[in-house]
Image (cartoon, rainbow, N blue to C red; front, side, top):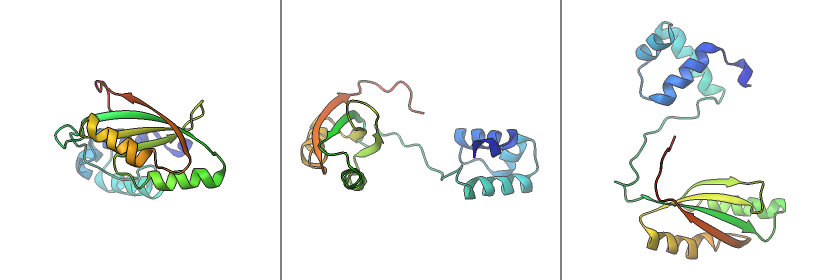
Length: 149
């Protein structure tokens, strides 16, 4: 579907990626169209799934979620039912910000946000290790975020 995007569509996406709060008039000026065609293009990009939503970028340190850990998870069972059960359960843990199935010596990579290392330890011991089919975890604690976008 990517080849269906023209230069203007790509410019619209780039502008909204940089600032999702742009008015249609400002967006139109940036991409060189009038407001009405830009509104139609944005609506089409939303309907086609290129634009999935809009969100605020939150300062996680100020919110008490500044501790970041990446967790490698190896499962006991990787058949479809086991993967589905793991995926469903992961969605219920709010501290897990991201979950990626990985083609490697482990099965999943999680990005976990907590207040501090003690809170992370509780989440790991009580929630992540208790996820369906978990055999082993390995944790990597981020010391500094260099780029987050």
